[in-house]
Each structure stands twice: as structure tokens, then as C-alpha cells.
Image (cartoon, rainbow, N blue to C red):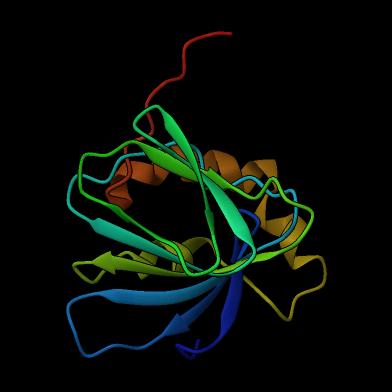
Length: 148
């Protein structure tokens, strides 16, 4: 896979951009009405989000905030977070993980953008279950959610 290829991961279109620094840089597209990953914590990675187009709702340590184009969010290690696009338009955003290495998660679970039904395949329950089972291998702790 070339680093500028696009894949779908858990309903998000991920486009890789190579860097020479100690960080991963990707451009993402979240379709209208799409949920992001399960709420999770990175113990090692710092993460930043920059909204380029549209808007995205973020859940960070129990607080919800909607970011619009031009706004950014910094998520330090140890922070419970997730996101979703509740709007009726796609959201395009830049995502940075530091130090470098988190793109391995996207490469492992990515479905090539050129495959038929790539979006649907990326949220197939079998893949979601594998993500839940292997999250810790990628510095993702997914806390158990209390019953509703």
C-alpha cells in the first residue's frame, strides 16, 4: 500500500500522508451521520484534530463539544475520547498522532477505497469485534461501558 492510498476504517475514510517527523499525519473524511470509534484512551499517543470542512462532535472526558471548520482539538495521553458526525454533511479533518506509529492500526483494519462496499465492510461486526479484541495492541484502551 502506498502511503497516499485511502482506506476505510470503522466508517472513516483515511488517507495517509508521509512525514519525516515523529508523528503520523492523516486526512480523514467522516460521512454525514457517522459514528466514530468506541470511546478510548491512548496511554502513549498525543492526538490532534483539525476540522477542515463541516463539523464534528467530540466527546472528551465526559464533555461534549462540536468543532466547526477551522477549529482544532488537542487530546493528551490518558484522555477518554471519541467523535461522531451528527450533521447532514460530510466532515473532512486532519488527524495527527505523536509519536509516530498509530497508522499501523489504520493499515491493519483498513479496507481499500477501491473495494466495492468498502464503507460497509469497514463497520462489519467481525471487524468491530477484532478491533475490540486487539485494541490494546495499538495503545487503545476501551473501557467497559456501564449498562444503560
